Every structure is written in C-alpha cells, then in structure tokens.
Image (cartoon, rainbow, N blue to C red; front, side, top):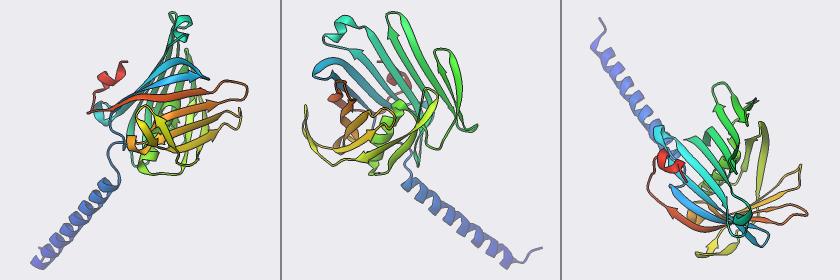
Amino acid sequence: MKPACNHARERAVALVLVLLLATVMQTVQAGCPPSPPIPAYQATYELYWGPLYVGKAHFRFAPASGGEFVYQSVTRPAGLAALIRDDTITQTSRFAWSCSGPRDLEYRYVRADDGNHHTQDIRFHWKAGTALTEINGRRMNTALQAGTVDQLLAQFTLSAAVARGDHALTFPVLDDGKIETYRFAPAGKPTLDTPFGKVATARYNRRNPRTGRALSLWFAPQYHGVPVRVEQIETGKPTVSLVLGEIKFDAAKSEKEAAGP
C-alpha cells in the first residue's frame, strides 16, 4: 500500500499535466483557426478577351458537411460570344483546412459543349501519398508533394495566404496528372478603380517558365483577399482578363447549395 504522500504527489503531477495539456490545446486552437480566413461568399466576374466582353464567371465558396469546404467556378459565354458558343465550364474543389492551409480532397472539371462532356477528376489519397487523375476515362496516378492543390484551389490558396498576411506564395499544383511548382512574386500595392470605387490591392505576378505566359492577380485585403482583377498575358495573343463585378459575403451554406450554379 502506497503512502498517502505518494498519492498526493501523483494527483499533483496529474493536475499539472492536465493544465499543461489545456494550455497547449488553447495555444494550438488560437494559432490554428478551424476554417479559412475567408467567409462564405459568391462573386461574379466579367471575362474579357482583349477589349471584347466574352463571358461571365461565377465563383462560390462555402462550408460543406463534415467540416469540409467547397470552392466552385462556373464560366459561361456572354455578349457576342454567346451567339456562337454555348459551352459551360464548371470546376469544383472539395477540401479540408489545416494550420498549413487547404488540404485538397477532390477536384472535378466538366466542360459541356453541344451535348459533349469533357471531364477531369482528381481524388487525393493523402495516406497513400498519391492522387488519382481521370481525364475522359484515362487514368493516371501521381505521387503527391506536401501542400499540393488542384488548379482551381490554387487561386483560393493565394487568397487565403494574402488574407493571412503571408508573403511566401509558392506551392505545387496538380493538373493533367502532372505537378508543377507555382511561384508568385509580390508586385506592389496599387489602388484600382472598380465598380465599388477605388480599392487598395496587393498584386502578385507569375511567369510560366515553359510557355512564357504571364499571370497577374490583384487581391483586395478589404474583401478578405478575394481578387478584384486577374490578367493572363501571352505573346501574340489578346490579354485575357477577369474583372470583379459583384461580390456578396454571406452566412454558411451547405454543400448542396454551393454545388449548383
């Protein structure tokens, strides 16, 4: 039988351990928010090909079931382009959130054009360290790198990084079964004229070393890091631009609400 002093000592040690654990958990919870630093929102962008208005892009971000999140874009032709094209491109990313940022779970791309469907599906198997990509029925496996995201979630990853005040915007992106490292460099903090008036932005640029294609994004801190303008420049081709026309931050939505255009 143990002396009473030993029991008292053990209870004291147990109490100290409990207090230490509680302190650690509070620190983790305070330093690692359970959700992205961007509230649920819906945004509409106008798409330009050079000076021509050719389409609209609708973006949605919302919480889903099981503590997951959905980010989606739906692009349709508009203006004169709608007279000669009738295709809709829908991209959907489903992901979880961690201290290091988004943890991609699934990506789906569908291009519907005159009854034809072109698809790309990616399923991320983090425990196995691989991602399964299926493009129009053709399958391929890719070894994952830490922080790998799909091409749609890459934009959300950038917005979240800007909203958190990060400056090291480098991460791997999986597309067509291949991983490429995206590096975005800060390019000043210009003020842009927008439909909402003058907006202070943080501009980031990326140049594709293989194609020479340049990409610029203007993120608005006052809109939680959501971009107000995106431009893609390629030699010999008109500049492709996305210009924010409308944005609404709203309460949490279900995955079902976020899934439909």
